[in-house]
Amino acid sequence: MKESKKKIVIVGGGIAGLAAGIYGRMAGYEVDIYEKNPIAGGQCMGWNRKSCHIDNCIHWLTGTKKGTALREVWETVGALEKDTKFVGGDSFYTSITGGKRVTLWKNLERTEEELLRLSPEDETEIKKFIEHVKYATACEMPVEKPMDAMGIRDYIRMGASMADISKVMKEYGSIDLQEMAGRFRHPALQTLFTDYLPKEYVAYSFLVSYATIASGNGEIPKGGSLAMANRMVKRFRQLGGNLYCSTPVVRILIENKKAVGIETEEKKVSADYVISAVDTMEMFDHLLGKANMDARWRNCYADTEKYPLFSAVQAAFVADRGAYEEQGTIFFDCSPFTVGGKKIDRVSIKSYEYEPEFAPAGKVVLQINIPQFDREYLYWEGLPREEYERQKKEAVRAIEERLCIQFPGLRGHMEFLDCWTPVTYERYCNAYHGAYMSFITKKGVKSFRVKGMIKGIKNLYIASQWIMAPGGLPVAVTAGKFAVWRIARKEKRVLP
Image 1 (cartoon, rainbow, N blue to C red):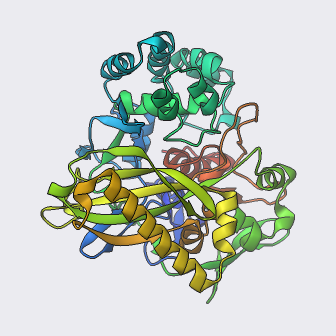
Image 2: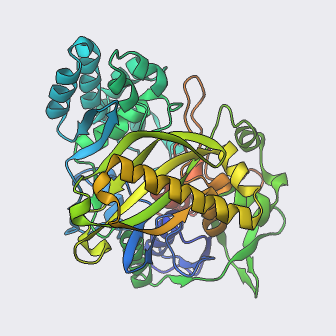
Image 3: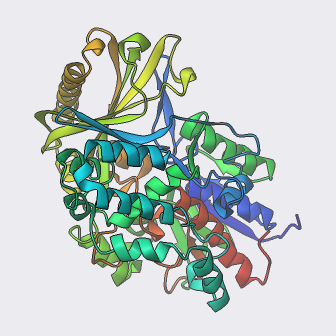
């Protein structure tokens, strides 16, 4: 590593910030990361309650298949290692509707057989769906350089490697999941395809997600989210980077339309380059000022109809293993109740039986997820503190009762661990409206993507899942890499 006297300061120690820090050190820059929380990782996080571990983030990690370009990035930043073990079951999820149970298995042939057995009258749509999931396995994120920096040869190579994706886009790129579900006759299949992602999502996103699981490119690394973030912290420090936790940044310093450093609550830190790796609304609202937000950002944040955001109310329990023997994620109907001002009649439960160390011997952690959107965030955010806590407790009671109705063996054999809402994500991660992904890509709406820079401010770069829909961990890690790629290119340096 050839050392440079130049310094990069990174605001935010989530996955994007850690990735930027690692690539910055590999490029020979001095790098400091400032993180407001006691530990780094951002929303890729987990915590302990009552001798149990609650995992907040990874449902599956895109880019786990050896030989893929994204796997190489994950290994470069230390998130995955050559011998990383992966855990998890043999399915994507299970949907129970009207007593009918149907599963999307990792094995596509098994899925096809089960769906056809349930609904022979949907044979044409079932076979079409399976065929296009197979096509979607060709989808890979560009990770070498930002798409705006790609030349004609780059696009030709990408097009050749992902030729089948055009077939997926042609069939499912102009409809949303609700319309896709409407192509099926059986009500259990209609519900199946609107369970996992918001029904407003463009349908091809769902096929790509399922294809990632089915192809073996979307596994769960053992230890979950916190363990993965900690591996990245270890890698950054081994490379000589400086990580300052419990040190919130109050502003990015701009002089003569150029970023020159940051200011914490205690000091100013000079830098040749600044990378903002925080929630972008936090960046515009507090670190820079909204005067620096251009029309593209403003319009997307303002139009929650075209660019909605989603979060969740989640609750975790620990149960006796003999009382709950299901595996994976299961969606099921329940009697209606209200959460965040929204009527709920369907919930999901995920078992962490594949991580026995997450709970004491003979126990298993169960996690419940209830989707919430912009409107529900505003509801929670507007509640007085006492009422907020009361409604959280009421939601937990309602959830527990419905779990015991659906799975009677749980009654008397489960204990509450924790509950968190969209406001929790905002409080701990500065997540705008509690969102843990970027803008939803809806049919007929241009997918959100911007360059990782602020017009009119030099030497300031953005490393955030927010720069490209739908966000998430793959966008975050590549955004971190690309921020340093832009700096290195500016200085005519080659990024390792």
